[in-house]
Length: 419
Image (cartoon, rainbow, N blue to C red):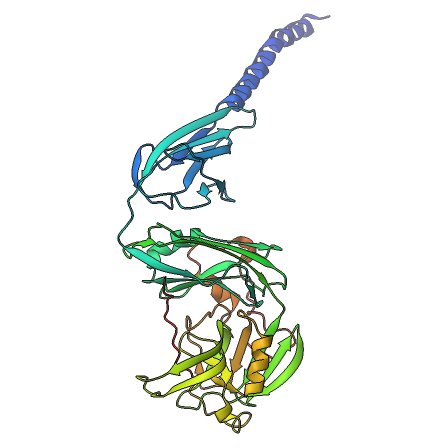
């Protein structure tokens, strides 16, 4: 072996231990990093006072994930709850109690099993004086139509700066899954939830409006925590055309009846648009005394509300001769006693009613107007970012299948002006 090759070999041998030492050192660093406990921060802060009873246990963790959350009251009783899907907070199943002290314990664990645990105690606020009256228009154990939106109303109305936090406390779960989005009426009096398409018949919808004690800005705090579970019935759509003075009734995409109608006369026109049957009344009284074009009191049968302003489908035996020919009502859809009775047995709250060809358009918020806009417009009304899979693809709101369609007290207060 010549001297040059020998010197090179000696240099490689001498350098080899340095390489091995370097790999060992790096491995130890990685192992040390894996065994380092996660970094965890939770809210409310330790010893916080005057905490709203809508409080959640907020969690922020790095280098790990939340594995357990427990919350107990001042008597040691456990409070049940669950994590949000995004892991940002743990939500109690029921509101906390006023003027009570709670203890929260949160554990986060990393991939190697190393855990971090934090504990905090906090005290909730006393009962507030200013309350916002809320109303969930979704009742337990009911059967609704496929266009039924989940609607929450507020009095006084919710200011824009408070709507995101209110929306975060509105929970909807559907089986089978049909994700949807919330839309606020401009004045903050109502917020709707629906999916891009109509609910599938047979769907079970579970709702929680967890608003008790929730701060809503200067107007006050939420008044209650409401829950409901209901199902979706068969598909029923009504189409009303002012040009023909006819109503077409579709059941499960089949035309089952044509009904002559009389709509609002030009001075008191019926609204054109996509409306929802809001309530069904076997009998009611329309009292229009004080209205500019009213002044009458009349008892009616088989009335189905379409707007807060007092537009109904109802029996009108006095206008049977005009039905199918002339619009003579004060804004309602007049039908015969026989047809009104049949409709009451056929329709459901939550069925879509499309009116076209009249002198005025349906105003946003005058009823449950969640379907009176395209999806691309609807999602703009959300106070929170809409998930990517629900972002619009510039398609209109679906029209009824098989049809020719185009395109506490409640708030707002319903009117029984009728006509």
